[in-house]
Structure formats: structure tokens, C-alpha cells
Image 1 (cartoon, rainbow, N blue to C red):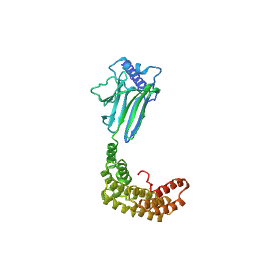
Image 2 (spheres, rainbow, N blue to C red):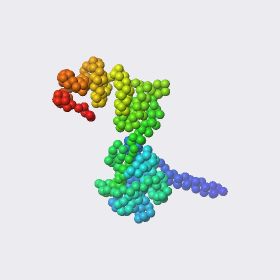
Image 3 (cartoon, rainbow, N blue to C red):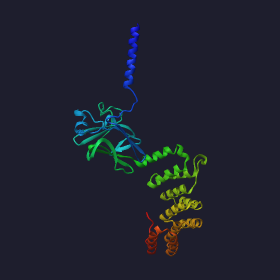
Image 4 (cartoon, one colour):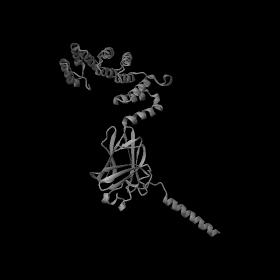
Length: 367
């Protein structure tokens, strides 16, 4: 009996030692280290998680990525676990729609044609058990390109625009690129609607910024106007209301874009009665001049210059207001005052403006 107990104790100790030897949390360098890269496209987060092998002198595109001679195996697009790629919103891959989510990334190779496979089953070890029919949400054929030699496999994010970028797998002398696209307006506006129901609902700046983003892209203007009004008037029982020059200017610009003349005039009238710093006055009056409204611009400038007599650029705006009111004589008189007050570095441009006013050819930048 004692001998059996002893043997049992030794067995337990051995099992414990075996477990300690096999399972631990020590960090040990790996031949194909793990890499995680994240890029944001618009508001869409794109994350690639992969293990990065080295060529180590091998002809990797013949000896490694072809399933070690097994034509039935896809390539895991990295080492160890399958490479994963995740998108926080819906995207397109080379124009093909793909829903938000995490995908195992695998590649089939035939000559110079590479079939990229995005598998909703994303936690596989390698590609050994990939079922191309059951596991794959999207297949896209692409061609490879030559690239500068890369010893380690990596993924590059290149050719970015506001709504697309190219992801390129690079290893040795070959690059496999594919384009990720987003519907920027749709994703951003949907996210605005979501975020404005959270803590941002109490921030007048958030409502104004959402409205201004739509204004700048000339999209979703009706809802943008509602957001601008929410920034001004607040929420339930007027909570967090903050009527100021910034959000009133946003509202005026949206109303102008929507061609709502009466509401626009009312908003400008309210703005004219508000206290403005020189920068706010400058921005508002330039906007009014650009849209052909020199009369209200002149009224606002007269009041502001009385309050801020050293703001020479407001006097320049007043001169331009007279010019757009077809009073070039008064405009040139005002420009002479500006010339005596403007900084040295602006004098060459001021000379050009004076000449253009004299010739009747002056135009505001951006018009």
C-alpha cells in the first residue's frame, strides 16, 4: 500500500513538472514574430494580425507559399495561425462588398494569379482545414507586382485617399496588392448618429462639428441643419444649449446651401447682434462676400472695427465690401488706410489687390 502511494505521489509530481515544462507565460523570441498593424480609413479601423517569417535564403514563392507541394492547401499569408484582417465597418475589396468583421486571410496561387480569400472562420492554425466553400465569405483574384526586396514578410498600407487605400503583402521581391474602399459619407454619418446619442449629446461642439462635416462635403444637409440647431438650442428642455457665433455661422452656411433665403436672412440678423472677436468677424464677413452679400458684411464690419480698431484685416474686408457694392472709389480710399497698417509681409499682396480693384478684376480666393 505504501509503495502504491509512493508511486502515485511520484506520478503526480511528474505530471506537475510536465505541466510546468509545457505551459508557461514566458516571452520567448519566435522565428516568425507576431505583428499587429492598424490603420484608420475615414472612421474605419483596419487591423491585420500575422506572423512574419523571413526568407532565410529560400525561394519562398516556390518553396514556401505553395503549400509545400500540396495543391489542395491554400497559403495562410504569413506563418503559424492564419493571418487575420478585421474591418470595423462594411468595406469593399477591389470593388466587392465585404461586411464588417474579422476574417482569416488565405491565398490560393496559380502562376501569377493570386486568389485572396476572406474567411469568416478566422481562427484556424494555418490553412490546413480551410473549406473554400463553407468558410470563405469573399474571393478576389489579383495579380502580383515586383517590389524592392523584403527579407521579412510584411503588410504595407499605401496609396491612401479619403475613402480608399491599398494593402500590399510584400515578401522577397513580390508584392500582392488589393484595394480597400469605404463609403465615407455613409459610414461617417451613421457613426455621427450613434455617437451623438452618447456622451457627445451634451457637447454643443459635437453637434456643430457633425453639421459642419456634412456642409463641407455637401451631403446630408437637412439633417446637418437639425444638428446645427441642436448645437444652438440644446436638447430636452434646452439642456446644454449654447448659442454662439460658431454654430450660428454653421447654420447660416447650411441655410445658404439649401437656398432658404428668409431663414438665412434671419440668422444673419441674429449674428449681427452677437459679440464677435476679430477672427470670428473675419470668417463670417469673408463668407458673406463670397456668396454676394456685401451689405450685411459691411454692417458687421463697421461695428467690429469700432470695437477692434487695430484689426487691419477687418478694414481690408470693409474695403472689399465697398468694391463689391460697386463703389471702387471708396474701396481704394479704405485700401490706403489698410496699406498704412498692414504688416510688411502682406504689402506685396495688398499692392496686387489695389491694382485689381482699380482694374475691376479682383476676385476673392475660392470664387
